[in-house]
View 1 (cartoon, protein in one colour):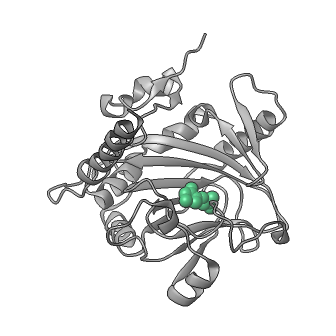
View 2 (cartoon, rainbow, N blue to C red):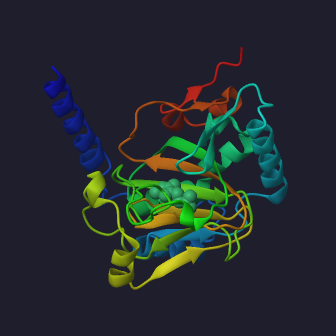
Length: 283
Ligand SMILES: O=C(O)CCC(=O)C(=O)O
Ligand SMILES: [Fe+2]
């Protein structure tokens, strides 16, 4: 029984991942209503294809970002009834759940026409929002962990969920001495294994094998749109905490649990997005 469950689970994963999310050569994107002009859109699609990442400056408005940061403060203090901040000792970070209930206007940015157009142009598939996370990462003393053996988001890796894209929005200013997203440009290409041990890389491997390591800095409100098969990491520093929200997009619709979203936002969405989400019970 359990062997059968494992086999069917694996087949299901590969079917969804390789067949349902495989690039569809005839996929065409529409440029209308994206908020990007034609050239900017084309430049960003090219960046995603070549580098695996495009950075959208001033994506989230500052007043919204300030409000969200204050809400995270309240959640961490235990002052919000519908939201919880879980502390991970291992990561020295808080995760706020359910992430899509943090702020409706922030959640609406996940469905921005321009962002969806970029994602679908790169994936060459219709994609859906399948997950999200909200994190507050604390500054850490780098001597705290053994960086050679550590296997977390703050060491070099690519995600092992197959063809998936993420949009991370910085909710704090990230200057060069702050905790930032870093990536190895162009490493997303080709077929990639989903086996965990294949997805992790040491600092010395990256030093020896990667020509182009990029560090993403920017003011609060900056969005980093990336192909999760690019080798990347959260670069830890000891300066200040960094808040972020990350939206996950998949063409094969993995994973299949449906994140909660507020009924107000749910009702605005096209049915294709609604099918992967669950309106939160407001009672
Ligand atoms: O927080 C970051 O800068 C990177 C996190 C990460 O690895 C991810 O969201 O897949
Ligand atoms: Fe990652």
